[in-house]
Amino acid sequence: DLRGRRAIVTGSTSGIGLGVARRFAALGADVVLNGLGDAADIEEKRAAIETEFGVRCLYSPANMMSGAEIAEMVALAIDGLGGCDILVNNAGIQHVSPIVEFPEPKWDAITAINLTSAFHAIKAALPSMQTNGWGRVINVASAHALVASPFKSAYVAAKHGIAGLTKTVALEVAREGVTCNAICPGYVWTPLVEAQIPDTMKARGLTKEQVINDVLLEAQPTKQFVTIEQVAGLAAFLCSDVAASITGAIIPIDGGWTAH
Ligand code: NAD
Image (cartoon, rainbow, N blue to C red; front, side, top):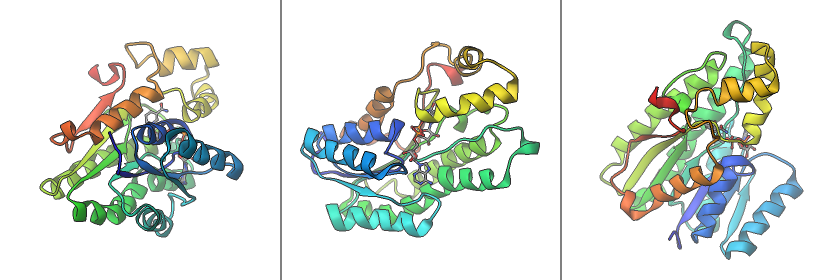
């Protein structure tokens, strides 16, 4: 039950973030949506959360490449919802390329959106949690926070980085009722995964079916994609009171990927 809690979920106009935001709202939390996309489509998703779940839902257009806009997103939660109790750093992008051809702007964007944005958001949101003596920070990392794959240098570096940030924040606020954990999904079927199939086909000279079965699900012993609902369920569990002792944890939800 998250009634009375106020949550920010970055990158929640699509995929995992949208699933997490909708799960929190279903449990009674007020939510700030964030992410890119078509304005009318986003407004439809925002309004649907309010009408389906009877909670307040605001939208922040903050670009996760800008520290100033991230601070504005947190201010929107504090001014509009009265505070921030739950922060999910989920926004992320991917680029697949051998390192010698890896475009510098892609490296900069991936490290900014997948790692540095979490620093800015945590910095801005923690004081509200510390004042209330209760808070949950959840960083959506990846199995790539624990292991690597070729051709994903920036992504793997950023995800390993967010594991370190997670542990550091957990230690800093351990006695203040605030936990900080990282969720590490294996492959989840979302637009992010679908979009990298053409580049992986090119980088490895494979067909679409070969990429899905021999590259993506090759790593996942269950041979099943993780579902958005499963990731949202784990995020909701981490927000519950029985999860109060789970902090600084890097938690795989990857169909066994990081077991081998
Ligand atoms: P997605 O592409 O469906 O969603 C990404 C979200 O981030 C969108 O809402 C998008 O608008 C937003 N976003 C992108 N750039 C942004 C920016 N500059 N500013 C603000 N918002 C921005 O992707 P997804 O698969 O749902 O991924 C969500 C998170 O889960 C990412 O951090 C990703 O690395 C992680 N993850 C995904 C998988 C997977 O298999 N899909 C696996 C492990 C980890």
